[in-house]
Every structure is written in structure tokens, then in C-alpha cells.
Length: 66
Image (cartoon, rainbow, N blue to C red; front, side, top):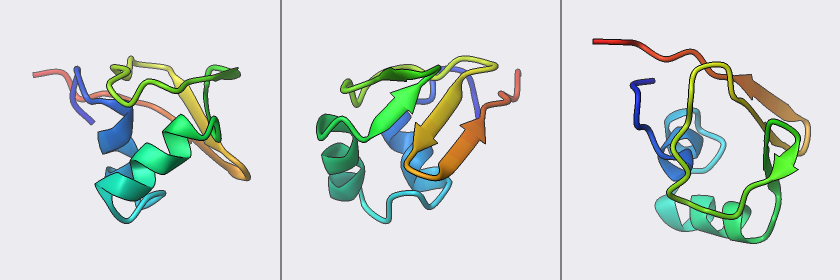
């Protein structure tokens, strides 16, 4: 992932959501946690080391710096 990637994009990139609409639903329904807290902002910018959780899936984010 690159710096500035939005939460919604991350969910699609990692196949946790198959469409932007599904990503929006997951986020706005409160099913997504970032660093242990509910995150309902689709535009939340992912940072190095963030831990994103949806139900049983856990992502530890590493970013590619250019």
C-alpha cells in the first residue's frame, strides 16, 4: 500500500470487499476497526503500522514509501 491510501481502498485491494459499495457498507455499519476502535470514515487515511480488523480478518499495514 502507498501512503495516503484510504480505508475503503484498502478493503477492496485486500479483497475484504469486492466493490466500493460493499466497502462503504462494511465501514458505515461499524464492522471495521482500526487499531481496536470502530472506524466509520471511508476516507480514513491508513498509516504505517495500523491494524485493520473485520470480523475474523486482521490486517497489519505496511506502506511502500516512494
